Length: 64
Image (cartoon, rainbow, N blue to C red; front, side):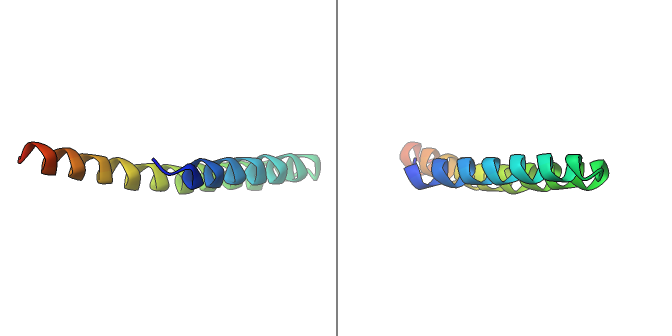
C-alpha cells in the first residue's frame, strides 16, 4: 500500500472536518451533512480502487 494514499485520506478528512464545523457554525447543517457524505464517498472510492487492485494481485498470484 502506498503511503500517499494514507496522506490523501487524512487530508480529505481534515478538510471535511473543517468545512463541517464552519458550515454548522454558520447554521447550514444540511450542507455540512452533504459535505461529510461527499468526503465519505470520495474516500470510499479511493479505498475500493485499492481493494480491487489487491484482489487482482491475489487472483494473479494464485492463477484464478
